[in-house]
Length: 115
Length: 113
Image 1 (cartoon, chains in turn blue, red):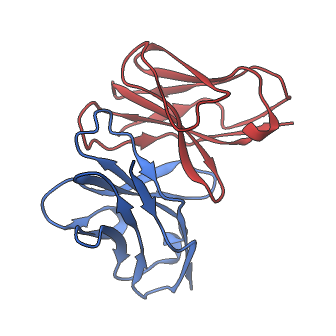
Image 2 (tube, rainbow over the protein chains, first blue to last red):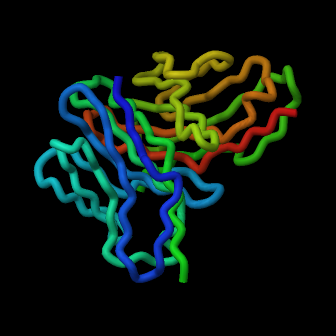
């Protein structure tokens, strides 16, 4: 069975500084990897995904993520954080050839960007 | 843009009541999902459906059932609501190709008293 670990419940960063939200995964075979963001009292919004190809994936709102197969990681990054980036971030994995492509989510990381 | 609509954003129900949560998507997606979100537990899959009238149990199906009579609509049913089903419920849909993005609705906050 697949699993996702987001080792930090909360990440604090000052506005303008780079941010990293960590994600590691466990899956049989090759994975599909996703990042979603959730603002208060809202649903999840898709940020980016890795399917195949280039290990650096660019997504919405200036976010990017790097797939590292040897470390089974898919960390989310942004060069310069904004206060408006403060939200709950979820990493998710689905194995290739899984049929129905159900996602397994991590428990989420709260990102707080201070002015 | 994909739109997944959950008709009820906030509900308060009494213990033992039958509860229907409705979800409609407008992208002709084959796959639809119901997740439950709780603090510290992340998202957990309750049920999913890959076709009309088809359903599959997820990780936590106990106490829930689903209905998919039309392709665009996927309903979650709590036959007899209990206080431990107080939660945020998220509906999602996905096109029928591996790696397709799953799109979420805005969520339904259910409180069972």
